[in-house]
Length: 485
Image (cartoon, rainbow, N blue to C red; front, side):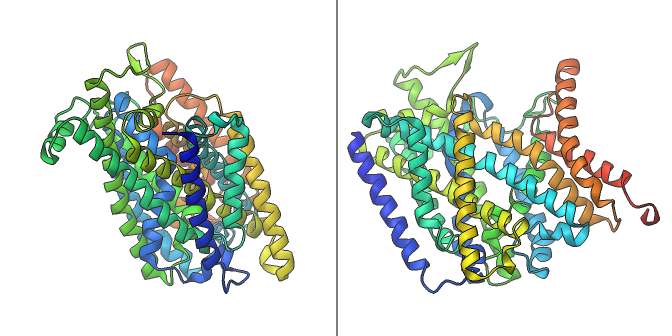
């Protein structure tokens, strides 16, 4: 498919996003950017959140990683579902009862101002890296499929995407994103379904034969009981629970969408529905991964292998879709990855802007003109931060999704420890000690993981978030105020 046609598709898609932005920007208030005026239909929020979570990472990394990690990722997904139940019945009531805009305000209520600022700062760091890594993958694909043919350098491709996102989000923020994410989710899922259909026909399989081919394949291994492996069931399941709580329930990005629902009950319905749809969608992408490898094997397509293992597996889905699956599949893939590019960053930038302006600039006490000015400056500032991170990681290889979850274990671990300690104990702590604890515990976790690998061949894997959170909780107990023990 010609780069010119792909470019026209992207421009048309962006035009639709601008149209949605135009209609959702009408009758907005100062708080529309942050809260969506708390009028979003929960069904729309639930479906749209799928696109934000899937992003380009799930869209590309999960199908590719099947060749090296089988279906072990599903163990992690099972844990996610349990984590979403905790979010639904523990965290959502807290956020609604306190009427929070920035969810980190809870930490000030529970511990003090330094805990509050530290929690927010860790979110800003976590979300900046997460959003940048998700956009990096999508930008690389768009560079390969479109912009390289026009002689556009990679850094310019990233800048173009960020500018386009700014154009449709800067007016009404989360109020627009609730609706644009719904459109983007539709295109993401459609691309997977179209690809499965194309591969099924290419392999001359019926629907039932397709299911049999996937479930009987050597890659269809769901459970790993090797305790030393990073993909061990217990490590994956427990970390799935904790990462879901941390990266969804303690993440301003995801919770900001949920808090646009009309009331607590609808917000809870949103999370439960979202968890089920997401689990089914992730299983769909894993199944697609097996079919992609079947297709490559049948038609003799050479894949990159090093030391007997597939490498650069993130390239598998884009390569087959753009070069082997035909025009319809190519168009659906481009729409899917474009949707992933925008959905992975638009809500992240809005959440980063919300957190920074509320938690550090006290924007709620500014006049309307000052609010608008600060909001635009901060939105621009975080766009620059994400651009810089992407450039720093632009030469990285391997599946991005593993990198994101490993980084999340270190950056979200202290947040998880703070919230669990705050919710399940009534102890008061020395607030001034919290910043030091939250910096030192990730470093200690990293050291312990390195020690276990080198001395005992034991990889914590995604379980680094559990170790990090536990170390944080133990440290908080140590700095409990004496008269409160």
